[in-house]
Length: 422
Ligand code: AMP
Image (cartoon, rainbow, N blue to C red; front, top):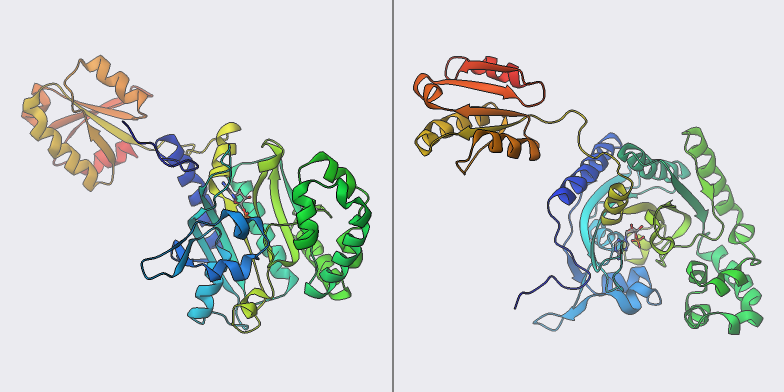
């Protein structure tokens, strides 16, 4: 009997690797422009790291964490998201500094025991950043700008950038009182999940996809009308700075996010081309109290995470070109006889020393079928080795697109070979 990979996980290979590489390389280029440094944290942490930060009443902590006891009986959890673990690391290594913004990025796999469907996996990858050490709204704008820029550079056109404020811990609790009061006599009409959310995490009701709950929310008071003066002024500045950077955004009053640690600015980048339940490609927000909550000094921060798998799905679905427009040079060496293999290896060695991507055929077939194979596998040039080449140290390189071909002495004309293949 064969064994498949576990439900909600995937093997990634072939073209999908190229798409991922394209996304990762594009993101990394922007991180470099914005001065972010990479951080790698363990794939598992003590469970407390997530319980304390994400929030006991969130879906993630309540039912989606891969938690187990290790051989010494310690509770361990596979990371379901990046921020909490990075905050733990920043405090552990005292990386925080209020005089200089700490800018970190990560590319890591995450684990959530969710109901798998297209764009929702149990193991998935996130590319994320954290900007730690400032509550300046300029940082919010820069972080949102970076998120937007990555999707711009990837070639997406029809995305929406949604922003909102959820206030600080003080003004949010005022709003929650007003919101619960509004829902009080409608509570029984909410779905079962939302009735539970009403008591434990009322803002999450805004995330419910059920029509009836959405209907009830239509006339709800909005948080922006209840935030304190400081939070209001912060949000207005974020909006102004985004406009100054020429970034289009939509203020969505009903936007909420799945973690309890967010304060003030939250944001999401969504696609209308993805199914509505899974339409968010990435998102993030401010978390001004989290570091202090973890036992560190009061250090405001903000970050985002992009879903790598979901971004790859959409890139493929929309046929966005992900390979470099100039086709990379790839040479295929075709031997006509096993006796020429040693000469073939000599050519491979010289081409690879010249940093030219090349391969040799491992089957002896007719030249025409080998050329067809080379074309199918995106080789740009072929070198056919026959008796005369073998005897004279000569190679003839043929461009498969222009059909131009030229012969070179393998030993004395290396520079010319490189020039021809450029
Ligand atoms: P979150 O950490 O929940 O804010 O999610 C940020 C992004 O990660 C989302 O917008 C998705 O693109 C991606 N993501 C979250 N959960 C999953 C999942 N279960 N499977 C695939 N991608 C996910």
